[in-house]
Image (cartoon, rainbow, N blue to C red):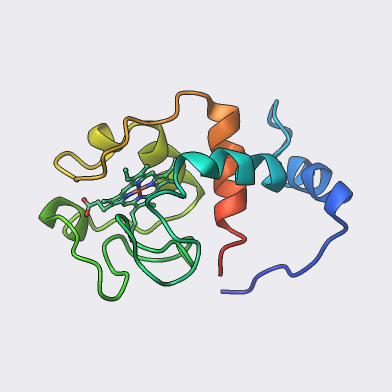
Length: 125
Ligand code: HEC
């Protein structure tokens, strides 16, 4: 997958806004990094594992495939590929999207916070 390397940081939200046909909320990786404080206790940002799997390269990855992490059967057999939509849905309501998965996290209700967070997750490589 090709990844966009560097766009002037200030221009990035506007660029994404124009790409996405003008959602009400411009996505913001630095806000997303703050939201990640809800995740960081369990998820390392590299390929090591903690209480949760490391999230380096999570966007584009198949669910349940981080090397060395013991996933639930529900996660391994979900068949999900993590992208903007599937991450947004899962982070919003983990148990609804993958019933029986064992992530002890109830979800983030605010769609703007989720969008920022997903934008931040894309920077983890
Ligand atoms: C208390 C620990 C904990 C917290 C907090 C937590 N997670 Fe998780 N997460 C887990 C565990 C454990 C799993 C594995 C679940 C399974 O196997 O069913 C997981 C799985 C995931 C997966 C699937 C990973 C893969 O390799 O398929 C994603 C994506 C994810 N979490 C994102 C997040 C995000 C984003 C946050 C913050 C909003 C978060 N998690 C908060 C523990 C946590």
